[in-house]
Image (cartoon, rainbow, N blue to C red):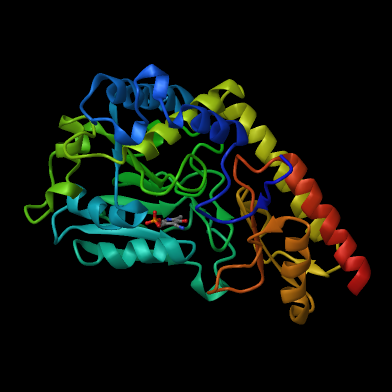
Length: 362
Ligand code: PMP
């Protein structure tokens, strides 16, 4: 609408307008209950219906097999960096990390505290611009799992297919491409994601975990990090992030109404292609450092040939209601995050602006 901006932030990020409007209309008095979702008991029948529908819609969206539990937790994806080794292995057991960006690196560093974690490949020396071929990967012979970050939010590097760990499980951080495309959940032991990019507000962390992996946590595991406690209590062991879960539920409903993740992926591909071809077709005025075959559909980093123009680019874009285009402080340049809720119109406007800006400054 007129008074909203195009928000290219990496997360918290833009949410679908119709979801926000629905939440607004239900805010004061949810479905005649006489209260808002924020005020409800998490054990009351109203909230139970909300969390159950959110889970069942997510199961439909991702076609989650019944052997998997879906948990709505707190603490962000960062808490899962510790929870994963704590729940899956003993302190002296080996686990592998394939590091394609700074989130994977953070996950590895945390896992070192609770397991014998090893980096089997790192893209750091190439400034995190690629993903290795899986054939050449040497996994540790006894590694209990292989961890990947399916989409590196800062570097814009996304797995298009997945390695099959020879001796163990695949564990994936999908924080920044969760529900952006169909995923074969059965290939993974665990999929986890912070909600605040594609599916809701911050404060909710979704963990999809194969049920046979639950129940082997290390003794020192804090109770809030134990999958078994949360699975046995349907994510209601303690007070969950009720309002956030409600918002995620509205987003899941919206994704289903769009025709599910196949349709969502088509839209995401179209947006990303438009933006990448504008970058590639700019004769070097703009440049995306990421190898083409692994460019993210969600986070598009790019640099300007003349870095001294970056501040002006950001300022001029903001005047046209396109905000949050500055790259992450660790890498500089620009980054446009174009999650599910970013409209094609938003990307078209950005591309038109980029062409204009180039014409003025080339
Ligand atoms: N993993 C990825 C891929 C992320 O993008 C982020 C957040 N930007 C995190 C983990 C950390 O998530 P949180 O802030 O929810 O702990």
